[in-house]
Length: 333
Image (cartoon, rainbow, N blue to C red; front, top):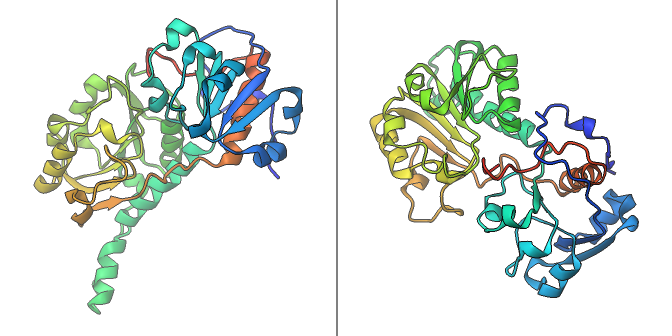
């Protein structure tokens, strides 16, 4: 059985930023999903408040009138911010909520789930980069042809990795590769230095360094500034790099990506996210030998972790403690 923690110190790996100083009383909590059994097991203190569990499609206006807080993977069809104090997303990404207008006007707090996403994504990226460095595909092909041809694997300590996005997930990915001796460059809006990166530069300076790296990993959220960030101009500066996208598909111009694969600027593309999900059957990405498509599974939300994070966030809200997972509406994450 998972334990529900109410000590915000468990967020110690995450940079804590206080965006608001609000003590909030939450009495009525609307859960968009039939998760009553899970809440009974994982959130034993729930009897102190009133919960209502409903499938997202069955939530009515009177349910929103009743609720102080809305919790779930996505907003219901008749979602109305004016009726709520707090919204908590079971996902790390919140662009489906941010697409709705009126957050600042209605002074609604939006928080997101932070759990083992960074560790999961780190292992996902590590698995594909090691496969490449250790020549797995080459040796498998040689085995099928009964060929004994030696080729020396490369080592993690000899490669340079550029990570777009230096938030909680990007920092965890950086920590993993730094541990193995890789040189790790971070790209962020501010260029502010953080642990586990050898260097962090602003997005505007990234293009000047792209030609020096072996792998690029994007953990970027989708915002106005990151939409179609990876353009033909970016890809043209790459020199036979591996590209991994575990952030959001719409940060990449897919036509430009295909062009970079054709030219050899990208030798391998690992895409856990794409602009349209599921990836349409007519997409040429399916047939590319140098492309790996995974169905958005690099950081699947485990419900027990999502409920745990919700419990911690509720405690922090009601005791006026910092919210490391509060969404900054100006930044979009």
